[in-house]
Picture 1 (cartoon, helix red, strand yellow):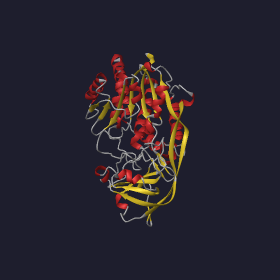
Picture 2 (tube, helix red, strand yellow; picture 1 turned 90 degrees about the vertical axis):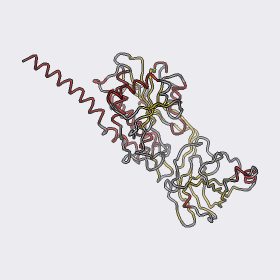
Picture 3 (cartoon, one colour; picture 1 turned 180 degrees about the vertical axis):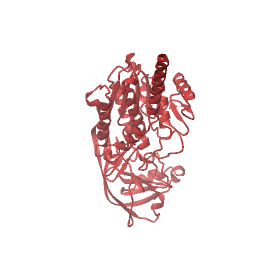
Picture 4 (cartoon, helix red, strand yellow; picture 1 turned 135 degrees about the vertical axis):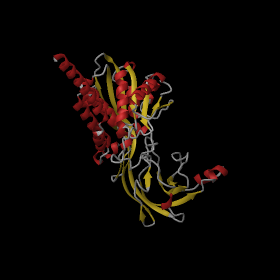
Length: 424
């Protein structure tokens, strides 16, 4: 009878342990709370107006401290400097008597110089660039300092290349204004670039009124955030989990870009994994370093800086997993560099098949499209994982909000990566 009781107790304990792991992995409460926080107005889009990046870095470092992660630097922060142009105030954009709505009707490029005044419009026949070799040259001979050129196409390879005095450029979009980005924000133009809805600009319009201010920072200080869990077997070898926490920030004082999928979702999963492995019951065999990068949207600047200024020998990194945009998953995941690291890809596929987590673990080739890039270029085994599915399309706009993000397969992706790290 006593032996039976012992067996029952051991079985119950085992079941409780397994159930605890499963319930932890399947709960999106922490992720939801983290994403809501990172996407809230107080974080100012985690960009470089109103120091949204610093607010986010301080929040992440405070969570690392709550988890009891070991620090490699003071306050878990690794500061670095960068050049960046920002749109600090948008006063108005008026066509005839209509005031357009920033972020909905139009974007002002982050590469734009402050403007204030009334500007004549000159509509450009885009097709002539292909058929008339002298058209562009003749155009540049004109005095364009008080004029804004309007292009029917939203795509142009000379968007940032005008060398002559010009008021600015407007690019028209049929259905939506596309996405906002930091292209050339480190080397801003001496003119304004605007993307706007075609339907709002009558071809008979002669002029517009425009007023906004930009600010160029030649030496803006931002931070990577780092913390680690000590391994119980391989103390001096690391698995690294990364995600960029920065986003597009604000365009003026009234418009901010929440960045729920890109990349509050990846940051939340990275922090969730840190929370899990920081529990003494889940101590991994290998040490795990968790890094939240800044400056990704500007050009992978945070990860580039870390690779050039590592806090320990990069050769101690056994594997790096970068998480960027993991808010969907109905169609599974993509593994960038999966075709390079076939053994690791097969590990992920084997785990997925055993547990039926995701519809598919798809492989991609090399692509320098996120923060794994500079590690990979420096010989560190690195993969970038993102979710795929048509259930959510918002990207670099004001609609990528926490309340809309489905987190379709968040628990399953979390579990897959957790299991991979445990089995490594």
